[in-house]
Image (tube, rainbow, N blue to C red; front, top):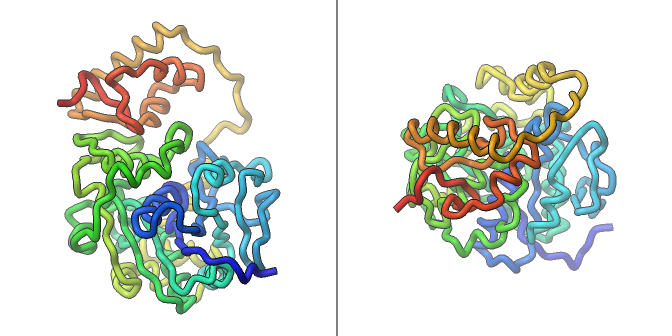
Length: 370
């Protein structure tokens, strides 16, 4: 039964993952952290979290809360159905806004039904669509573009609801998908800049959540400045004051900028949406995930024993020298863990006494930056 007494702001995390974290910060900055809100997000997480390619359906979870027809809420008690994995249940316990699931398997029109149902449940008369990095305004031909489909589906679905909507892009360039030289003219001047006070609502997240774009945004908002290396990226990210900016665009402006969002109008299935992505961008990111998943070992190997602490420190020292030679001042902890192939125990030991290396949620290389 619909909760007619419910009144909440409705936000859409355009690409899932770090966008849900960013949406919580943008909501706190715009309306105050204590203002009730619902963030709709995909359960579409990297293979390190979810070994099953592509986004998860609502039926891929046990224990979602059926708030209304076409609206499933994720709670700390929600669990993914094996072999799928998801960090959304844990994230729902960390963020102040409630989290609702976006299931894209019905294409744009299926998502539009879910968003409209959420708007009725929230008694919201408008929608805020939030993206970290800026791939929501990708044109599809950028050589560094990796994951445009979720964002474009969200844009097309919000447009299909007919509800008034505003798009917020935070941390331009932090996802390393659209070059800043191309991105900034599309975004215009920032509406405001996030600061350290806005990051308090997500302060407990980055000890366990792998979102690098979200971590970079928090670091920029907290005043960290310098060159930061991330995993699997074509170039490092420059943390400066504009990196903490939040830009506001109209939905019509984003639709005009995004050929993929326009091509997705009226789609009724995810396979149809993939075909639109291939036609506009030349690839489907879900297909790429399928190829990567197929290359993973068929069965988990026995965990290797932890190396001795001095061996881990020696390996890190050599790795750090190479990273500093690249001109990096900071790195994400995820890059350290993945490139050094650290076990959970080794990572805990390495990060246990960071001293002046602590630059939450990043890791400072070498002497403290002055």
